Length: 256
Ligand code: PEP
Image 1 (cartoon, protein in one colour):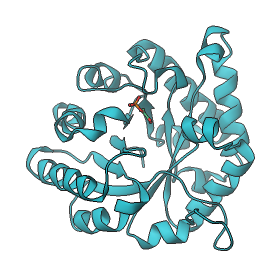
Image 2 (cartoon, rainbow, N blue to C red):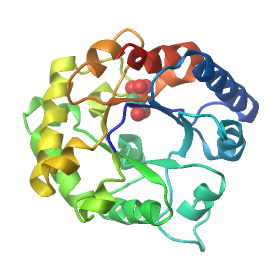
Image 3 (cartoon, rainbow, N blue to C red):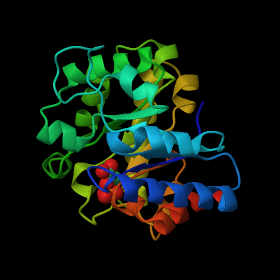
Image 4 (spheres, helix red, strand yellow):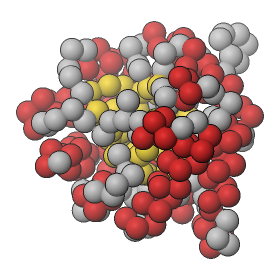
């Protein structure tokens, strides 16, 4: 079901104690300050998952996610985590296809197909990231890039399976750079994504897909971005490491 979602991506930041403490602050602020039914998701490093998932138990609106999984069920894959293992911590979400994983860890559409399938098989909601590089934007090919990322990594799903995904449009040139897509640029791509989903499945599936924007989103620009028709929230990197900034982004939906 389409929902307003603000998801934090802590990336490889925070030691165990600092992560648990930041998460506690977030949970307490969410309890006091959030009205409405927006979903808050914190995607922490694996070391925090079990503890933060425990802290979120029984807290409406707050869930926990991982930042990656391996596609296999178990086995000799040193250093990796399976969907079953992530799910056993109490996490409900997993970021898949983040541009940093595509760029630094060789993640491909083919491996993402398997990861998406593994996540869904274990009841983890993928937050599936797509987006173009600076060169692809400048060459005007960004619609093609986005269409091919969808076609090659998630359009093998049937409509029921696809309905369980959350999509995140993250222009690579905006991630961690302080350069944000303008609300108009982001809306243009979000509308394109929704139209592409409608063409593949149907309008109902498209209308029920949550599509988040990610890329240097902060308390100063979130309102203009989230007020666009096809933007249902954000995937937040840097600003999710400060409880006040993260909550101010979440609170954009209080006024809606
Ligand atoms: C991200 O890593 O998904 C992200 C959007 O990062 P930032 O907000 O720091 O640009």
